[in-house]
Image (tube, rainbow, N blue to C red):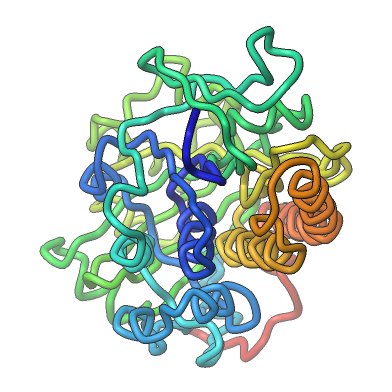
Length: 402
């Protein structure tokens, strides 16, 4: 039996935002995270996020972390350029998105929250293997089963903030993520790279996306000055797992990305402009990122007492610039509903009924919000990876030679 009212599975943006909001409200909770330590996350920290004023920033402000956010937020990193990656060097979009969309590295956002959650309330190295209901797996309260064979139970509410392959999700719905047909080949260009100065002069502190038929190449500036590179290609789902591609072999990955190979792995960037190919030829640290989604029509389920989902666990979609913002909004809305219904002010059946009402109201709003988010992401993929990309992205804006 546990002494915590809420179990939060996963220490990503949604899980940590919820933990902080519960902390501010004096609600007991515990976060279970599969990473062995905060340092383990730093080894795969990912790129940068634009935190929107009307969504993600609201959760930060309500959590009392606005000043801490300001220390890391990059308001001068919101420029966006759109190029033709295969044509004669046209630039279609060059705009400044404004101060409502500051960038922050994922690692910095997590650091802000980790410093605001008391030590001991995050259980590191606790990967959840399975979540069941009761000893027979069919009824009663949720039981967390960890990879090391231990279990935990007795929570008033279990919240799955455990991402795309959520273990909590199976308590609520049988739906599983579906492959979007696209892999992002992720890589990096650091300040000591020989092409860094040229790339920096092009992208500055924001993001550049180059489009071409059925492919994209994106370069995004991080807080440490480096650039994260995302090469999007339409390939089979087993592209990164069938043994034909070794992501640890830098030279082999460069050669593959610069090829025009057709077949099971599709064509790559060998026929793109000299400048884009020059950057790819110097990229390092290749990693696969297959894109998955939950169908918008499947983002709904019948209420399950004592359990719910937030973020990608609930409404996984392809990148759209809104995923982390909506995940943090989920956390804020759930915390507000729990407080509104005084869920943790009463015990017994009254408390359970209040909890169930709060979760139902939260989920009703989250279902609609999440389905819309995923659909927009899928629509964006259809545009970005069209045969006539980048023209398909929209009417050329301020088209000029580059």
